Length: 249
Image 1: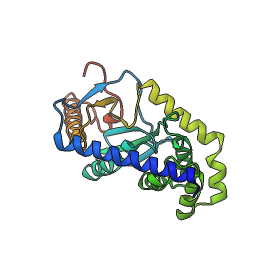
Image 2: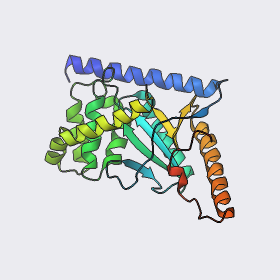
Image 3: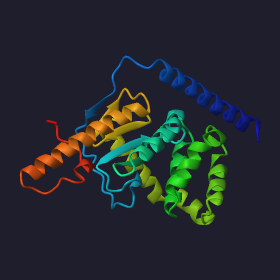
Image 4: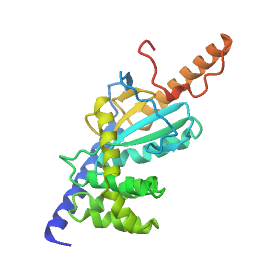
């Protein structure tokens, strides 16, 4: 490894360590600011049949979490296991929609990392690459040879490497990332990770418990909507949570 590569790798590791320390302090001390969900006047409806959406969890779940994320962001790396915990706790009620929001000015390898994940998606291995990118963030973050690392991950996943390399640099992949980014900007995303639950932006997130609080409230709301619909003689409102709630809720 060159001197420059070692320098950037060490710098990237230092950032991750610092972020973990900050996260630990916040988790230990808590916050006097209550978490809340704020409605966003943007259409964040998810079409589960759209092959460009990256969905994890119950595809037809009533609660949809949209995450705008940057693979090079240390806080996004820390959010990944929290999302796994949420999906494990709500296997039938929650789905996660992962969207790219690379902070290109600050994270020089974030765009290429997103391209690597989308290239893996072309061969049915999006979340396998997603997990590797976060698990091994210290290996490639700040590393000018990040492309080689991504290609090695593709080999480990058993992908057609030549196709992977072609897809990684394709216009279609870059357009997908740009579309994700544009939808995030329209929704007011300014940093990563940013989360929306059924069209509401989460603020003052304090870890897993914040998601439990918001999800339970949303599931209760959906039950009330379903019961009211049945009592009115209509059909059950199953799946209504996939759409953004109205302003007067």
